[in-house]
Image (cartoon, rainbow, N blue to C red; front, side):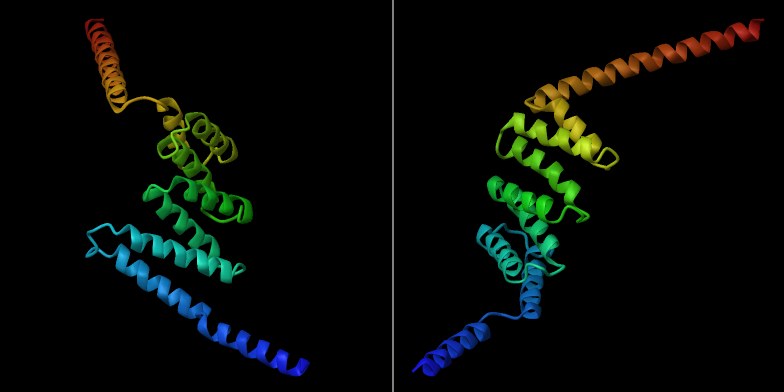
Amino acid sequence: MKNKNYLILLIILLLFAGCSPSRDKSVKNIGAMEKRLFSPQSTSFDKVKWDSLISMYEAFCKRFPKDSLVPGYTFNAANISMNTGDGQRALTLFEQIISKYPNYIKAPLCLFFKGYVYENLQHDLTKAKEFYLQFIEKYPNNEFVPAAQSSIQNLGKTPEQMVKEFEEKRKADSTRQSDSLANVSGKNRKHRKG
């Protein structure tokens, strides 16, 4: 009787194993979906398809947690979540990368994007500033540091306020440049006379 139960259990396990796609098949299916969604011919936005791709990434990562593709797939899922407005899902996925794969090449970017998500999707400016500052402190030489600094300076400002400040700065820079040219020109005249 016990042997019969073990045999039935073994058959059920083999059936489930046979139904789930292999690693290579999963990678191929993900690649095909990415190709469809990222192709130039794909002009319409279909949230269901994007969510399906995220689910494919997540299923792969859950099934093959030690695979070298996991950090990249997790980053892609986080990035798509962020760009489709699912801030909470994006934050969770970015945090997974930061905590599980701190040496992944895009881990610094995940910290920056956490600030971005808090600022633009969650509208929590305090948290946004906190993550931008963490990013700057932890990765001071990263190419996104100027963007983080700019984001901190502009937290809570409307686009109109930012344009006005930019125009005022440009006007002040133009005035300084004119004054500087006038000073140089005046010095050149003195040297020619003397």
